[in-house]
Image 1 (tube, rainbow, N blue to C red):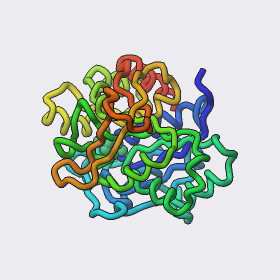
Image 2: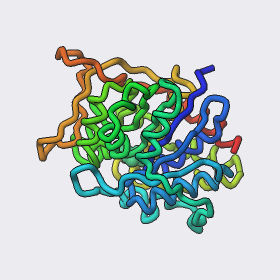
Image 3: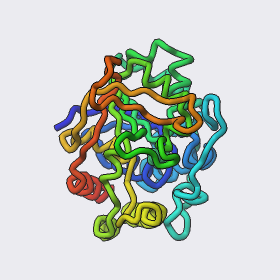
Image 4: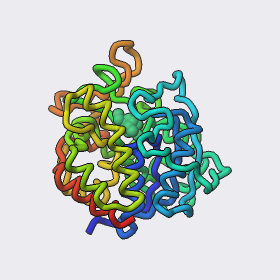
Length: 316
Ligand code: RIB
Ligand code: CA
């Protein structure tokens, strides 16, 4: 069994973020969710900080502290993705999932990240990022001492062989805040990167969504309805049977790392060019001498991934 991890999930829910949060909450033997920090991305912060609590309540976990973080990127205007995720960010369930009763924590997400990393023993907290890296970069700017204290940062973001999904060159999480990504990739924190090269291989095929719906519980049905909505954009765009279920790959890695294959690489972030801003330049073929700063994943056992997700969601 994988080592039990204490994690902070930094997220912009998002139907696929919801799936990731559900997978984490359904896996207490492997994962302790110390807190969830919301960031603006798929939808504005008011929605992402609401949606994180909605998902916790859907899973019966109102004890998970949820914090609001950055409402916009470090330097740039916020770009959102309602065209993919809908007005609420977690469109799909009919009627919409109810507003949360659990409160938002008073503390700012960045302060929670700093305080947790300083307060817990060094090397015991893993950061799992599912959105733009604004909260993490802000914490690093404000408290550089926390970088060596991070056990690992598992992030969904970037793309190389698969290109981009918000521009031809850039994946959405990096594109929203490329300056934050540049800071994080230069931080020295051990990074595991789940790019589009992996997530485009985990498609919400109809048979997979129906297996989740057939579980028949409220969380499972709500997730299936979120995936029904989420995939329609990608089916139109990619012509594929189902959409890429990006974010749960981050959590699945902590539970079954053997499902993944990749390699240590240098990754640089383009922040200057109007044409390619937000691109993750991955030196996969090691053609430079630039230092390896990330373990970049490229392959996943997609059937086993969905078996894991389905088996765990059934536990909620
Ligand atoms: O590009 C996909 C990523 O952007 C996912 O994390 C999705 O939720 C959005 O945040
Ligand atoms: Ca996300």
